[in-house]
Image (cartoon, rainbow, N blue to C red; front, side):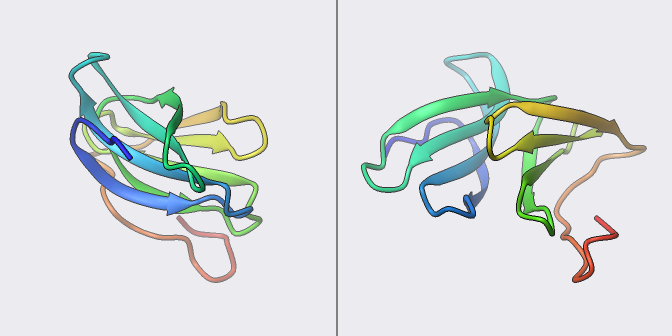
Length: 108
């Protein structure tokens, strides 16, 4: 597996097929985002560009979405596991870092 840049967090997709790696900065792309790694072959299969400094990864309570905290980007990026695409970007004050989802799924 080749994960380059500055990886911060990793989560396995609910179906167990893909690792998602939050990467603060990827020099080759000049971007921040989430690398997708095939869990069986450990090969890079995709990249989702987010706001600056992708930092923490959290699976939604419904397991349909992945929340990505963008530490220097002042936002949370919401990625659909089904489409591997960004479905929302929530601006937040300050610098969102590590965290979690409450057991009832109501608080991030």
